[in-house]
Length: 185
Length: 155
Image (tube, rainbow over all chains, first blue to last red; front, side, top):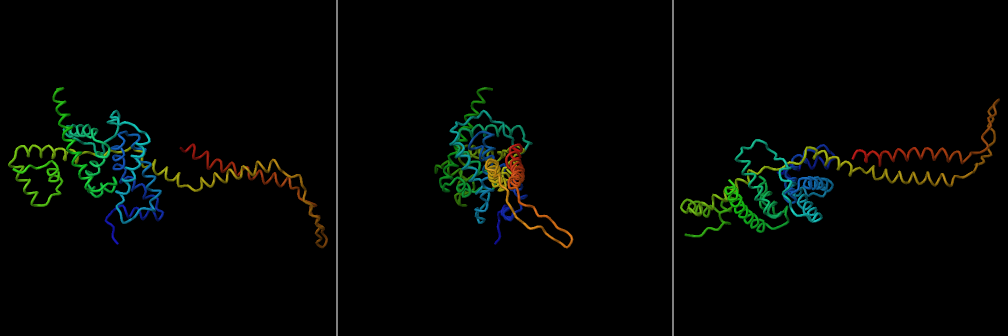
């Protein structure tokens, strides 16, 4: 049987005792995991802690992972659930104070792009954590509606509605932000 | 003219419509200015989200996960701690209830041609116990260092 998921080779090696492959698997998924956690928690430190715990959980139950499934979907679901549990524990309201604490993975952006990113970040804050996570997952290159639905434990139709609603809200929010910016100029 | 919903426009942008619908909306966008404006807005959001970079955790993240895995996975530490507690309990109890006994052996001297070897009359169990407890105390200290102190300072 052939596996299309490039992670399966690494997982097989890890399960056969090659622990060095764990590094590679973490490096491959750490940014996605961290971004998902951050989208739920909106706090850089907590997001890192959640991503860390999720990786530990995933590796500890790697033997239970169904190799027919996609590893990233399984892992991100653990990340999302861990983040939601953490959020429930903390019962904390989102704060945008620590915005900018995180680092973007690529460095060379034009000023225009930076502005666009700033606006979209601001607008994203107005969404709830589920919509924010749906949007983030959907725009990860390989995430299909089905994958997003699996991670968030919802059906595809619900995710589709959420994505539509979230983008409509984003469009409205960005319009308002731009209007405010124009007024302050 | 048919009113195109936002949802339809978003599906058009996502490329999830069937070919005929796709073509129809493409033409309507060209003809209808209001629709074209709505489309541009959604397209811009779509582009912004596509360009949105992933965030990265701190540089020590990978090492942190690997360390947690090796720390939590170590069976030695768990069983070592149990052994340490058991050894310590034996040392304490052994020190309290150390017997003052001498085990009499009553062995005959060993005679070999011209030689006669005297055999010990008995074994001092108290001395033996002290030696055993000292060895056990040393092992307990080693276990304490490996299972409690080392992980504590490493953390």
